[in-house]
Length: 554
Image (cartoon, rainbow, N blue to C red):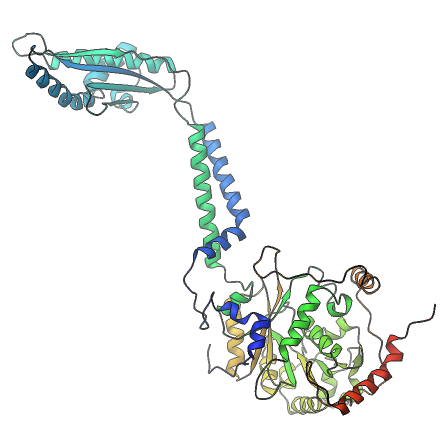
């Protein structure tokens, strides 16, 4: 990976069960080496690529039909000859004659296609072919342990095929009679008899449409399967958590399902709180609390390898879910090249992080509350000419130290790792980094390069989040839908759907409270409350209730 490996997050056994960490072990070992391919792997490939395999199969069948229709039909006519030997009346003479004919038949079949037989046939029928060309359309064979010779002729004209076969049989009789005549001029002992005359065929012998169609289907199927397996072998895109395991042993602590409406509704936790994508962000929030390292990370960098993998929407939704659970969260937009947090959340983004780092404003003046008051957002501000220098400055380190002392969790959205070094710089200054991987967008070598960039600077990789992973109902670990029924979600469900169909949600109501939260002490989701903390929490909730939960009287 190009450098000594940095510390990696270690998990409780509970988190391994929640995230399905151990399910990856049978598929790939922890060193990232591919295990032996099993029959199930081929079945997965065939099920995934069934459409392309079907297309290749149909193409093979179509090609076979096209070739069959374009081929000139050929007709085959056959005649049969019987070879016998004049012998004595004793059984010994008969046996010798029978053995002689069987031995001679093999030689006679070779004579059928010789110029000695075919040239007179060409002259008698007035054919324009030479003997070599006619021989390519003539075949002779003898059934095993018989004295029979089968002669077949193929021609484009069925009548000509039959006439040629009969002419060859007659000429063959004359040739054998001449060859087997003794030197004293006596009659030949070998007799050739025509036992079956050639008949003009009613149908073509080739092309055989059924046979060609079957061969075309088999060939197309073989090519389709071969292409599917080859694509699977050469495919280097990261499509699932199993592909991540082939690159690194860093744990996958979150899988966010694909949602076609995600670009139009980035704040999915607010716009559709009961969707599968929202529940996935809540699972990610839960998984973060199980990180068992020396000190829980109070500052987390969320980055990706390339632009467009969903790091900003992941940062925002994780921050919202933490705030919904009562955790005081500061969300910083540290992507000083293409800031987007302020735009997604409906905040003023002209002043922010850069304004604080250059000393023109204090963080209390520019940080903005959002939602229920537990979430405060620090936009990026103006795009500076030197983002890397600002993010690696002492002012940034002091700002992070200050926010960590005032908030439970500080989430930092940064630029992608591969184009620039901003994320690597900030990861060294914070408690660790979450790496967002966009399914179907990133290649394995790019993921390996990103992990190597973090490990080179000694950054702690808290885990990997696979974003926009496509899941089908037939998948082994498909998502389960447990949305509220119409009876229990008559108000909230319809409201959520109206929000998603309409324009993006406006900025949530802002409570009147100071910019820096000074409520209960550090609290992570799942931590138990002391009596004092519980009293403070209930008093703070009572202060926020009139501003957020009162409904206008009808």
